[in-house]
Image (cartoon, rainbow, N blue to C red):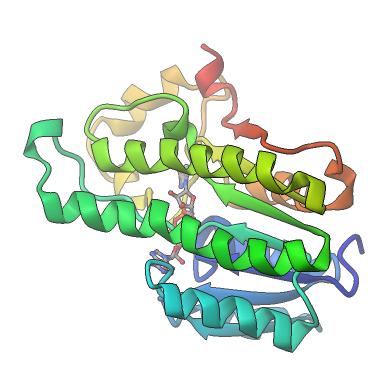
Length: 249
Ligand SMILES: NC(=O)c1ccc[n+]([C@@H]2O[C@H](COP(=O)([O-])OP(=O)(O)OC[C@H]3O[C@@H](n4cnc5c(N)ncnc54)[C@H](O)[C@@H]3O)[C@@H](O)[C@H]2O)c1
């Protein structure tokens, strides 16, 4: 019960990696505040409560500053402070060649994947610096350290998340706040589910993956919980790649 009595915020926890992390935090004793624009996150709260845990949900679009501020305030008010935040909400736009992307898709991807993380961090850092303690983990991607064809706005947004992470990490660590980035490889979630049904995709992808399979969302949770806990007290400004070896080739 590493998180007994701790207040933890998770964005993008209606499904996928965020959902798995929210459940794992709760199973270690955390009081979990979920922010998502998908109200199915209520089901995750019900699941946590069904297991005897403590959780709450606030509808929140992370690209909107007022909604993010309300989310962070709700975590502090309901759960007595903010010990850790996992800024994980994100979208993946349909793939196209660079020059085929329209301005609207680019803006929307940046607004959610990059500005959304900025807005969450801004509100969380304010609270955590005042407390003199806290841990923030931002979901980037292997697409934050390498490029894949067809993903221009996504790759730009995820590289940007690493920039936000490193800047806050060097600015706030003396105030007791650590900030790190998680770079998942290929994880089977609603975001990537269409790839499983695309002809030839797995046959082309899997030989490029040393581990030879996608991850389950639960396989990210161990790293998430470690990085947000005091076990990781010297880990700051780190970019942790959890990809089965994909970027080691
Ligand atoms: N699945 C992968 O292979 C993979 C790989 C690398 C990084 N990631 C990243 O992991 C994170 C989680 O993705 P996932 O794979 O679990 O996908 P997912 O689609 O299951 O989860 C994304 C979650 O974010 C929420 N969300 C999206 N836009 C939002 C907004 N504007 N405001 C609030 N919530 C919003 C969704 O409702 C959903 O709950 C994303 O940031 C994604 O880019 C995923």
